[in-house]
Image (cartoon, rainbow, N blue to C red; front, side, top):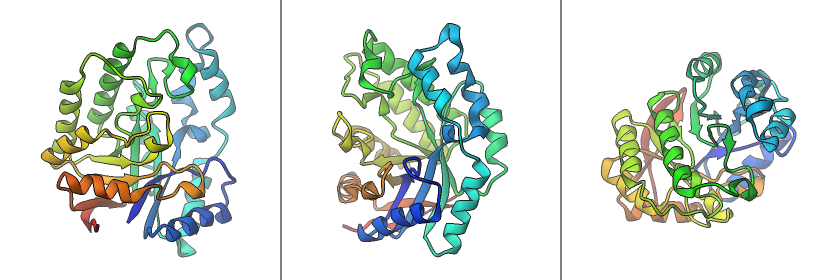
Length: 279
């Protein structure tokens, strides 16, 4: 059993902190974890986010967030995880990268310099609006339009070929907002592109800890992905050791219901879909 979406950001970037995640993982019955810190924790990625803090076209909360982030060195992060691996921790080296317009070459240049096992791709920003920052940032927003624009950005992210795994596919639902205008054709089109390119779909329990209180993605999306044979990985999106492997049994039960029997693992950005999912 694996958990390929774990963040260190709420503690020090130390070997002891990584060990705490690994110990929690073993208690939950996991055999491998993937550490995938947010790219905006690292100074290296500041240039691609800086436009979101432009005074004349930005939200105050976005400016404050950007001002207080981007404090760590990506190289130090990589070295920490390499050391953890030498100490016997069964981990993969990953990174969660936000898809932002006009940033593909910038991102590709950075990630090519380091020994990543896989890259998570995610969408947290539509235009200059960070939609999952807090519930109140949705005040006055057109939910239907937000859903439409979210999947437009997600489609562009999939087309970018930057990522190995799409994280929390339907994150736009995080605070419980439901669209009344269907985006099913858009979602099915994205899944078809993922199937064509062997891009992995993350099956995540994180939504069970959010106001929406359901898996990412919704079960009908998982069912359609299974029909297309989109490969999958498992995730908790843990930000604390106690959340590693959160409700992984529910993830397995769900995907088996729709015919999945294998989960994809990664090494040096190469996929290996040969691990049988047991009951």
